[in-house]
Length: 291
Length: 291
Image 1 (cartoon, chains in turn red, purple):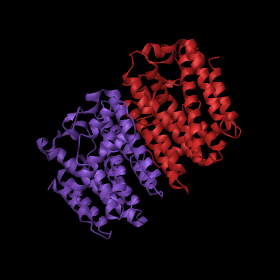
Image 2 (tube, each protein chain N blue to C red):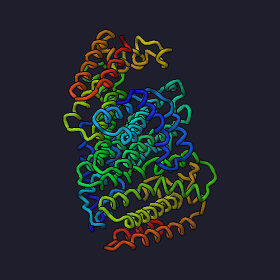
Image 3 (cartoon, rainbow over the protein chains, first blue to last red):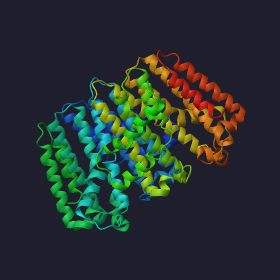
Image 4 (cartoon, one colour):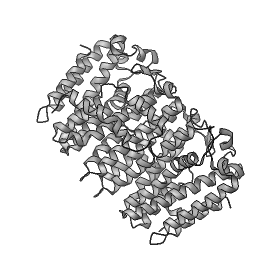
């Protein structure tokens, strides 16, 4: 196992070259895709994918195109979420949103392009393997970003804004809109390492619990966080009538729920033999942001 | 080899069940995806995929999920193309466009959902195969609908509207925006039949030439066609300042070019042993629409 910084460096160095490896992209389209890809963030999904593969005996280098693909999918979802017809956010990570910088038409196409590029990159890599492990990893990612996964969560989030928050609705949105793409990382990493079915399932349970922790921490920070420290506005959920966990359970209740989800994540990862400290620390660090 | 109607029936019967086989989709999202999928059209891409696989000794039944996926991708591209920020078309195949019927937010998500569903369906099917042929077919489709394929063509079409038509620009747009998805059908069909490399290449040449014929016929009909017969408005290319072949070569010149492209398609398919009448007739029928 390497540390977070080492996996992160692998991702940062590979991301744009992976896109360019697909061939000659029209300059305006490439510019818009690279603009959003390069806007940074913690790259938690691709790092998790590499770490999961590494823990289970796979090769992180072989998993790298899948890690890059997952970050491309996350980036496409942010570009489309920010559009005027969706969340209508004009800023993203301290820079103008894609549609502000490039126009709505190019932003829509940059999102479509990143999703397509992610699939192409994974499939090309899978075609060069001597087993179906790459195909299985790509299937896990496609399923979790799709119409029963991230797109489903995003649809319910957008179409049910302003309705009363219920446990079932908030859980559905958070499980699919947020946790599914984090689960895609741990599930795909396990597939690439050719892990046994019960190990894949433990990695899925870890990913889901970590993803829910992540979303709950985000909900709490939207209320109690310092905008300057976070680098983004706060109070957005309440203003938009979003179905957040804080609206359902209050700040104190959401803190409790987050702590419980982080414990579930740690319990799931500890069923797997080997040095799981990386994964335990990730869950604890996440929770400590609202400690 | 079966006839067009037989392949078409397979596609029509499988399309919505294929979507539902992915699991529980939020009702509003499913409704929007089915609305556009069911709007019909000639289904030339999925029919071609089944026919190509059949010609080359593969099993059309095994290829059916890939055929459905290709139609989902074509449908997503129409939904996003019609958006106000893109071509701003309020009607599609005689019905209100997706964003008119469901709102822009749901239309964007229905497009994202159809692209994701297509990939998931192909990958799930590929995971159940005893070789990489499904992975190779999915790779061909992902590549041809992506950032060096359809999305590239659409970007150049949208961003270079109103500029002077040159041979290079018009050819680039038509090759990628239109012909690439038709080529995806013949290439993926050949991959699923485990065809030899030179046969795959002949099918690619056929698909490209057929796709260019299709686009040139469309360009001519936009000028000389009867809106009532076509079921859509005419004169749209000129009004939008689109880089059409007619703007470059005139109606007579485009007719000549279309006839030449149809001949290229027929020459390419005739290099392949077996009963290629289906493919020859398809090229001739296409051309006869402007005879």
